Image (cartoon, rainbow, N blue to C red; front, side, top):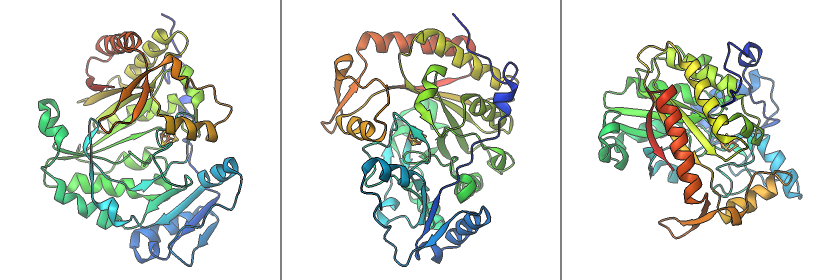
Length: 369
Ligand code: SF4
């Protein structure tokens, strides 16, 4: 098997490249956001970075100015809105197999992944909205502790307590320098007098502000990673090497960590590519004390709706979205997903789990999907 470049040791320049810190071209601030101390703190961060801030006179976000959908998409992706989470956000939804409950510190993401999981699931233009009513969002979680399907049905995960996923609709680390919301959540979970776990996944690497937080091992950060040939589908994220370096830093800071290998794709020479990824992750984690490591393995899939949205957002992409190469899978709600055929799924599953067992035996595989 050919080897992808190993982390740090063989590629020090790449790994030490500063993290990509998003600078939105437009920051919109609603009046309601400024009623909250956290909203005012986020505004102060934006102003201190010299970003173009527009204070809105109403709480409704303005419609896109661009009539062309592609330009409207680009403009929305360059916009951060400081706003207030609507009351519906405080009624949490179960989110198996990732966690017991989903909660949202924000919605939207500044990156440009050509397979974006949010395509088709968010309403309206993809403006990133950061929520100012953070105290209410975190205070609301109390009511859900001790409830949930994931931890109660899995002996292996019961030790984690009630799990709360914060990255279903955003990448909280990718906007942390603008919000501070993730650090506040990590502190909140760290101070909790109950078995709970905060979980989030990221494609970013600016972990320095998190390293010394009193996390009390109650936050599991998972890095979303993929085989190197798939990196070209991920725009605006930190590099794979930077993410793996950040993974090692967080593990050495005592955080439970994880690999979210996604979306798994049969890229050319995929066996060697995924073996190289797992070896690089093992190198990054070498010497981490008391390593608590999980792995989540997620194959690529798409729906008719997400395909339409992605084709509009990324018209030049060669991401494989051909229904003829897939099989249909029905969700419990009756909608259709296009997934890889069973023999390919089995081959990929067997290979990735064997690589993990060989090179990262500490990893507990939580699920394959
Ligand atoms: Fe979408 Fe996640 Fe990529 Fe952001 S990081 S663009 S949410 S897939």
